[in-house]
Image (cartoon, rainbow, N blue to C red; front, side, top):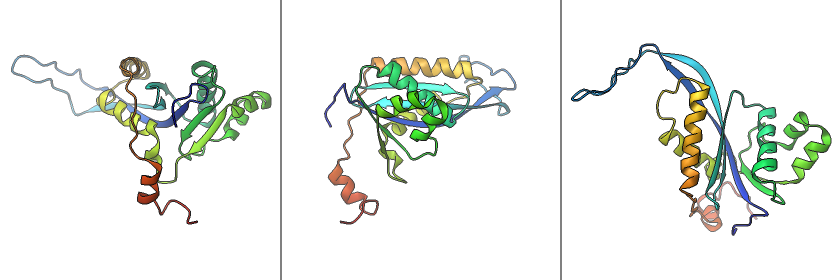
Length: 197
């Protein structure tokens, strides 16, 4: 569908990244000698990654949190609708079928009136089971992990800072996603996922 600021398409996905600290200080590189890092490390917990991508506008938003519960998802949705898409009539939200990704999560987190207000601004589209790769946010998480999270990161503050810098750089370069996989292609290649008429 063509870009429509009143009805933006936003893809959302979640992932995690283990925070790993050093036991011994790494030795920096020097002329003729590469940097040296001890194999031993300390585990500092796991950070949760919430990724929103608006493919046609080339915008991303990444939140790094401690948890990934229904309440955390609902809080991300509220922030998305009230801050980043406050002028949109409705957000077309593409995501997978994770058990936290439901309107019920809004009602468990907020008062009924607030939950209903948020729910009415969402047009939810779930990716097919075993087809979550249709979600652009999953692709963008892969880019984030390859460009930013491909090394040891010791704590939540460092990870949030590094990811914020990556997000700014990626948004400033306005990297749009040109999706080449069309509906006719999907009906051919994924016909076992579609109902027979």
